[in-house]
Length: 344
Image 1: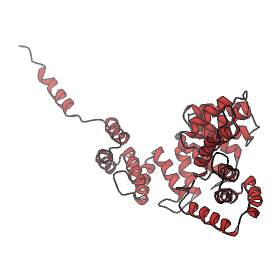
Image 2 (image 1 turned 90 degrees about the horizontal axis):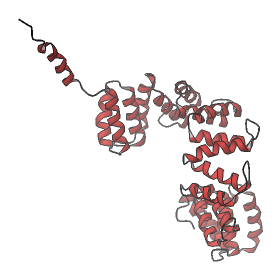
Image 3 (image 1 turned 180 degrees about the horizontal axis):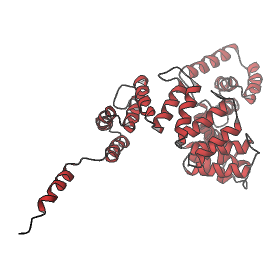
């Protein structure tokens, strides 16, 4: 009589039916919840997994505490979970821990420890850590300032697609910092970063077209890149748009539009725009002439060391009464107190 083989397969089928989701699936579920900003669902996954020692969950739980997503914001709790994940070799947590030491959030500021954790993450090709190391070499925080070394780290991150590193490489090639100046190489890196929507790179690319650095001069191309950048509230591009409309570069001259863009940038503290907005008020261009606001905006720019504003401040002051000067000073101080909110 033949033996039935079906029973031999039943345990395998039984175990297959009982097997749960893989770690990758669980992690994917947590990430999906985070993406749709369902932080309660995210925490329902990460808290349990973190307690079981999963480094990815510990990192995500650290992020939740750092950002206050679904929990009360707590740098101390974020630090705790990042440390646990970093000790297991989690590159993302190692970088996050480096950030906390660099900024002094939840821990005493320590640039040497920041470098240590960034280096561990960078050894695993964590692109954010590579970028952060480059920044520390630029500022000389925890290390001796070294633009050549900064460039090496920016290049490592840039070749992996980090837009900020690509933009910084562009700036270094444009200015000849840590390398011989090369406008075409600068243009190459600005283009890569701008294509990813990096607002500073878009502005920098606009400047290259405006000045004809490494590319044929084109006001229309400059305008297009400045607009893309300004749409992301980048103050330098807003200020540059103000200049374009003020001077009529590639567009019909429109002083009201110039004032609009100068104001947006000035409200974000951009000194050139503050100085130019003051000049518009002083001359009644695109806005009714108002000497008090002219003095106030020029004073704000001069306080940041803007040379044109310092000169205009000296020229404007003798024409104002003591009451006007006092009113301008009070208005400027009020703007600073309220972080430029409502200042026009």
